[in-house]
Image 1: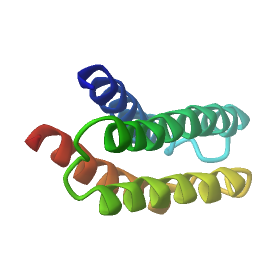
Image 2: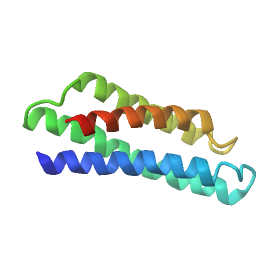
Image 3: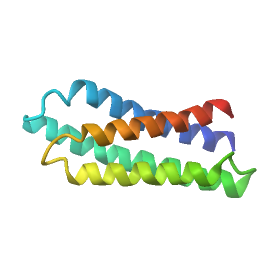
Image 4: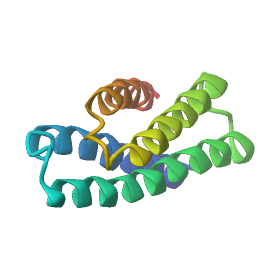
Length: 117
């Protein structure tokens, strides 16, 4: 159970850390083709990390004692995945700064819950 929790935590840290890093480094270069490619590759990473966190939450629920506020946590991860998918579709138009900011806030909320457990 501890291993699943740490896998989910690591995936969440990579997901949120990637969003923060890309907002600081890549977002200023809005018009370059390389920036669009970096965002595209990041979104693939975000989908994998989000799926890992989502599946880990369900594993923790059904294998051991369910995490505190499980429905809310699952809803937040699902919302974060939806925002990542939407921003991934819009990446060709412009970098998704507002959506990434919302995702960072939700991710930090999830990290807060992991730290408190």
